[in-house]
Length: 154
Image (cartoon, rainbow, N blue to C red; front, side, top):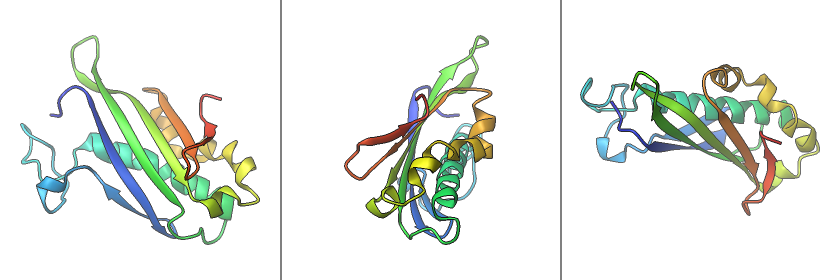
């Protein structure tokens, strides 16, 4: 089971709706689905990291679809998802919150539909909307300079 604290995963949009995920497990070699010690052998991402990737992927795909409808421009979003682990009242380890950042490139930032989509895309993300029933998720969309274009709290 992971230790109490935080972890971050990173994703890179490749093309279409294909994303490459870095679970932060480079030292583990080949990535397979396996729980970390003491339950598994630590060969791959644990379910908490997969959940973070699912939330970031869902948000990115939703934004890309809203902005471009057809074929989104290749390599137009980079994502990070940082999960904070905490203990509940029974002292069981849980995901206490998630911070997701979507960094859009200049072409996507300048797209005609971008402003309107920033107000809509989160409503169509099934995973993130469902997870928010259990813990807070804060989402920032930033440009390549790091300027915030949208924050979910706004």
